[in-house]
Length: 107
Figure 1: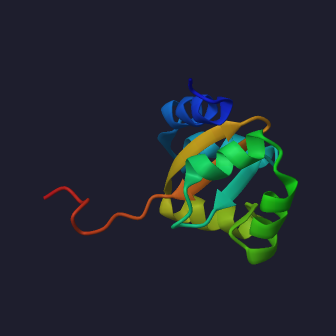
Figure 2: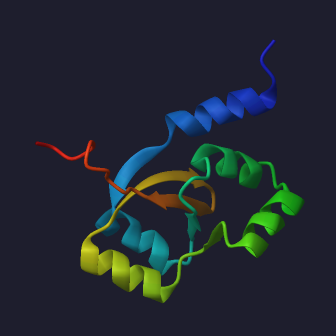
Figure 3: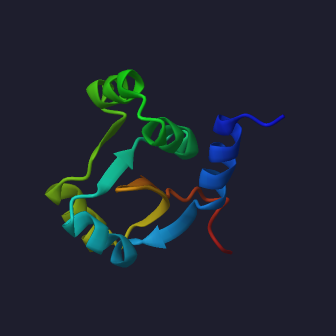
């Protein structure tokens, strides 16, 4: 039997996708963008937010591992036309900036 966390994790994983700053900008304008530090599992963070795991979320906030996107972030992302991995956990849009390594770049 599959537990509810596994089902939710699978659903969130299936809903994760790439998007650019232009698609993210309107969500930022309504104050709904949460940055997730690189190295963290975006889907795992979304699962904890969906499950309203306050102690875990507060610990990540205190450590700076997740935070609301700031105006400085928005300016930087706009200037670079940044790309992101994103997943929605209403009302939030969780994002991790895509950082391309040399092996990810087209030849």
